[in-house]
Length: 212
Image 1 (cartoon, rainbow, N blue to C red):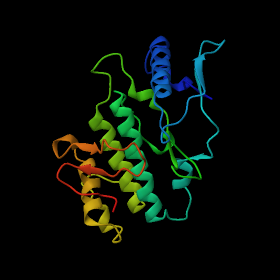
Image 2 (image 1 turned 180 degrees about the horizontal axis):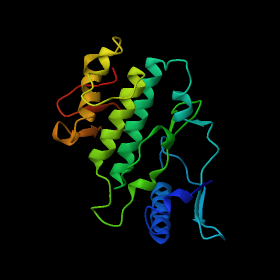
Image 3 (image 1 turned 45 degrees about the vertical axis):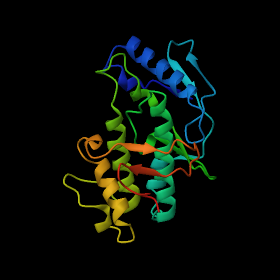
């Protein structure tokens, strides 16, 4: 069961937080896809705090990244592909995430492993407040870099291929394009319309299947 964090109250008026939280819960509940967390219930409790109830997923990506055992490359690519798919479905419904961090991603034992949650930052009351699709792509690139190389990217980071020689140059280039200041300048990420399967490959315009 998720609530507004008490520490957030100083950031903006509690009424605005409540509205944003409920709007985000409603948007998340409207997305029906295996890679997006399922909302069981949401509303405002007796204490006035809004809440959202999700299934009891095994763990978050944060916990997996804290595991000293390196992430298998095949699994890392699968997780990134599933993140791409979940974001594509959300974006198709006009919902941006705005806070794509390891703590916003639940992991399940069976494929698809990813469950995207915490869309709280992805709803705004104006176009100015609402994160852009490009923001989500940048955050995706940050996650992909970390999953593929074992390290978060730093300023002027080199391709993750320099840290993990097993990566294909195409996947390395795709990750760096996501990390561009405005990734949409370098190519719009697209998803094949013929299928909503998690196996659907993602591409950059003019590029091949980056996960092959």
